[in-house]
Length: 110
Image 1 (cartoon, rainbow, N blue to C red):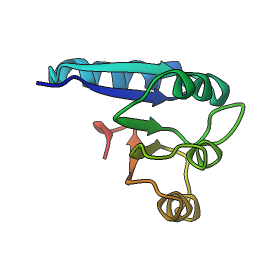
Image 2: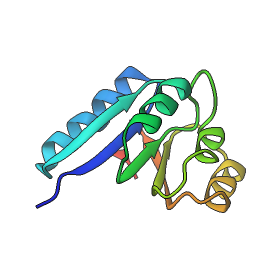
Image 3: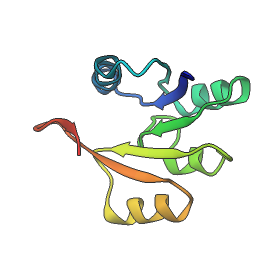
Image 4: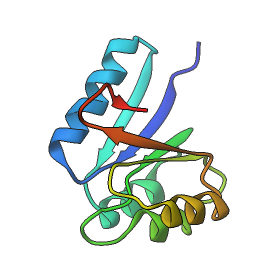
């Protein structure tokens, strides 16, 4: 079975840990790289190919929408807790495959 390569772009350390724990609990046999900023994500994307990018909207030094416009030929799933309906619609128009809402009061992802 092929190892899927994921890139998580998330600037919140607590949310990074939550996603990493979720992935580790799944036993998918995957590789998960983490970028904590827009610039770090661009560097990783220029050096390595990924099967899926998991992308937060607020990145500190840029936005997920700005990064999405630079990602081609890789499925992108937004994961955000602070996004408005307008941002969700824009992300989908720009090519995001899906948009998951962080729900810190429930199971984290809905």
